[in-house]
Image 1 (cartoon, rainbow, N blue to C red):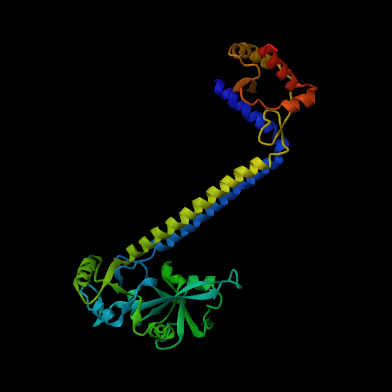
Image 2: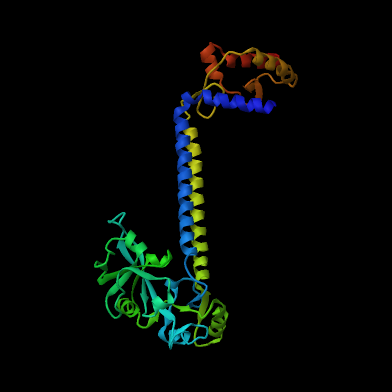
Length: 372
């Protein structure tokens, strides 16, 4: 059990020397705490984002985007394509009306409640009258539904909680554009709650995107009808689109974002960890340690005890037989941890503390060995 005794001895020495190295200990503790806090914060952001995105979308809805793109913001569909998409088989109907919502997505800047002097991006979505039947999880919790062909908007409860000026009756201002908030909605905790909704034709006019849409969200007759819809659109030469189940679309967005967040978080935490280690080392300068004299620290000489003398007596003759005349033994807890034959440390400290001149003694020994 020698290893256990050595471990306990090292631990006791570290505990006994804490008062002499409070500065380095504090830096190490603060540094490690900072790393842990940053790492946990990043993981919390990643987990929160995943929870919000994974709770969004339905396998009974299909999202149709421009072929080759992977987000609504980069997608674009013409009005003629939208009409063809709404004729596809597998889409649920309400009477003669296909439950497919052609929508336009943009981003506006609004001040945050936490920092009113700062602005942040808020998604704004142009919708159609059929949208609430397609997105059947959405319900109004304040005010009323917007009137189409007007400058009225409804806002998600998440957006209202985070941004200034999104209460019912407020006016949303972005550049020269003004919209009046008439209602607040919830969407079972999905990402739609972070958006602002308005009439799609009004949004097209404001952003000069005549008869242009970002995507079509279609409610299927059943989840099993997805393949029928997808095959029909893939074979139709009049449209160049890609089709995904809505929940799978958000799952893919989650994977990409969480990978980016986690990679950045681990990188930042790793750099902070390295900084904490170097900070602790650098602040150890001026700290007195009885067992170490390198790295900028000052050694303190201590008289040899019986165990030290016994170890030197056992090891010294064997080293001398190998032609060595100046060797340092590192002893912790009565056990040798290192035999230093290249650069024994603490010479100047020992000379000063015990009025020695080890350098002269060494030179004399070397001269004697050389026969001078």
